[in-house]
Length: 203
Image (cartoon, rainbow, N blue to C red; front, side, top):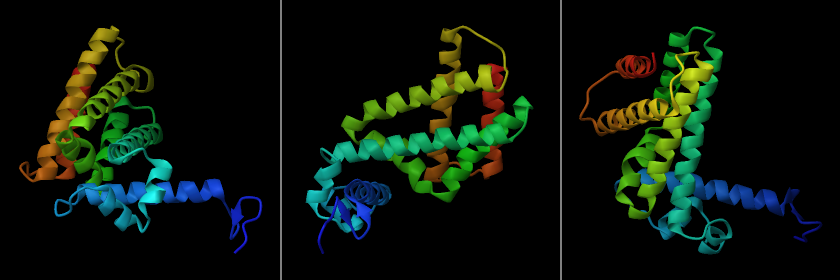
């Protein structure tokens, strides 16, 4: 099993590191979202089938990995929503609904992502700041989409930020209640309510 030019069985050292990192992120999501399992480095390594040596190859510690999980989910939400809006045509209302429906569908396909990013992250003191930063980023993103992508009315930056925070904060609470089961609503009802809120704030 000689290693030549950094290759092992045809895979470069960089690709092997990236593959192990991806396994740890997947395991981190699974363990963190499981209420029956304590979120520890040991549990995540076991779920990934890797030793702690490989954990430290990619992450400085447990919170570093959990923050990376949150960042990955936030990026997926943003990219999925933007792509859906772009595919919906030129009508602003259709684009808003498509964007929000894509987000809701992402949570249906993998409820762990919403639970981890919106609910579980609040329980980790060092991650609350990151959660707040991500929500503010998504709020700013919604303002940009409203005036540039959707063609809705131009407002001041202050008004945009206020509307964005109201929308994203409301969505976070709505999704929390929905995922917890305290709110009984169909996915389409969630899309309807969120679309009305978005258009009301920015229209």
